[in-house]
Image 1 (cartoon, one colour):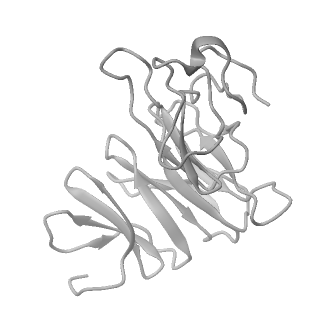
Image 2 (image 1 turned 90 degrees about the horizontal axis):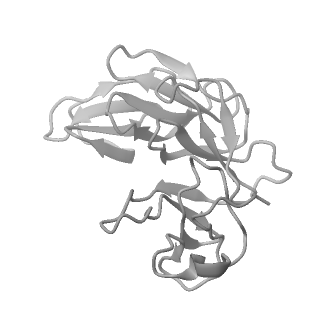
Length: 214
């Protein structure tokens, strides 16, 4: 594909960019040149995202009916289905540090406008065919945040879009802990990773100490 086209959902890793065009996932050199088709499903597809190693891509597709999450290897082109939701809507938001795919979908929700976040196991995470429901409540999107900060504190770990407001959440992807209220004790101190980004709002925060989900 050498001519200009209607390209969607670009994501860059190293010298490659992945994007959607003509109902398929494509790859192309960042420097320009010929793109090549990564999938050939001719089905609605969205939000392809590279893994940190650049060797895999995850995306949402309706090739088997409803919206589900798929994983493909850049090296050999082999792909696998990570979820079996048959949802009305889904998107890939990114990856965890240990190789799980972060996704948001309407799966198992009572209404189409309710979307929930999940972490899907992959061969990279050594937990294929696993799925974790993340304890954030309804969210529209997720983004992997920064790792440890210069002072050694944990960093944000994850950023979640809650009702139109971006909020930084403490690193719960490994512990699975979260609370829906202001953290107790010194969790509100400067060393706490629970902060609010952009607009002022009351958002789900997490204390560095593990606390039960609700």
